[in-house]
Image 1: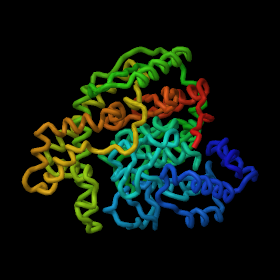
Image 2 (image 1 turned 135 degrees about the vertical axis):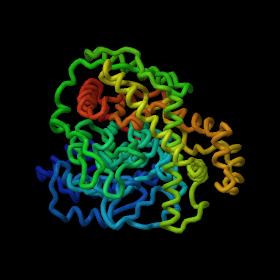
Image 3 (image 1 turned 180 degrees about the horizontal axis):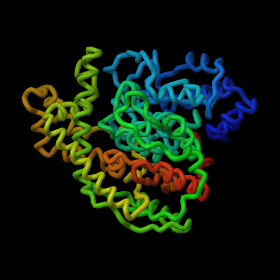
Image 4 (image 1 turned 60 degrees about the vertical axis):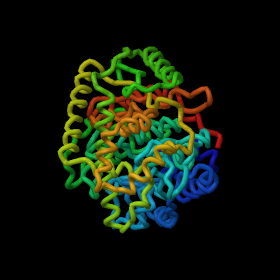
Length: 495
């Protein structure tokens, strides 16, 4: 199959061709591998090839809504038995899980052909994808810009036409941020909608959700149908959808009440182009018959950022410690920023961690109160267009932190750093480009990024919508309406 034909179809469209015997799964895989060979050296999205597994797969008789469709999984969480899960880190060595993650089992049950893993920043900790182990991942829309993170490799691969969709996860914006950077559709499901088992009960205290990045809304809906639901031993069972998401998506959403804001919740600057994109989306929504007004939930955005970061510190500390026990890795094998986060986490007492975790309830209650009046909350995904690649901690911070790291946790350095104000500065620095996404993670609500706008430089700008808990159907209905009103499928980078 020629690439020009391949890229004209979404995943369901390719599956229909396989079902109709117009093309074989083997031919689709050959096309995907050829495209990967052509563009991956430029974007560095696929870091772990799985060609042998893919070739064995196309020789099988498979079924499912995506039977025969080439697919990629993320190199964290989406474990494939016998294939290393590196977490984008040099410290993990090449140890491989003995069993698939539940989401990988469900991806396979949907019929896809998995032929590789995509790049993620070390431990999925950043909104850019530049792990030292694998190098910089680049945005197909502009190779000097980031595809976002932490599902940056997945987004770059889909945007470049290697696959029509790819596995992703979102613990602080990691589906929505790359979607916004790469002009894709990205839906983050509600907490518990998709299993994190069997290796975990919940990721990041339930802040993280697994799903896919897609070019079409219907692919996202159909894959959510395929992967949703608890597995044996899950910590809780979320109420199942009343109908298939693919069916619900096909119905008009009705007249929605949509509140919106373009103000950064942490008080930092928002690029005028990102503001203009939301104002443009508001006009489009009004033209579609929706009630749209400026209104935001009564939440202290800086306090939410602090609560998010303390979870981030504690989780990084625990993960680094676990990896070191399992692999014998030295502290210096982790990237500098990861080591700083772990040091800060080491300084947290159990009581402090729990106190910060308890604040999540207040944010969820405030957002719940907001949704008594509004059906959806709209904001930018990013506070700026996709940033340039090669970003790192400012040099002065690197110089200051290295000797402190050498002193280690025993001297109370982490607690000193947290009291010094440096953490506050790091919080603003790390979140200034992505201040809007963490609200959905800490409240467990579903959210999405929709590609409705491009900057003056031709860079994608995503529009975020957050829905009440469990209302993925409402998001998909609106997304389908927006996709029809302002189609984006045929807008592709020229790489």
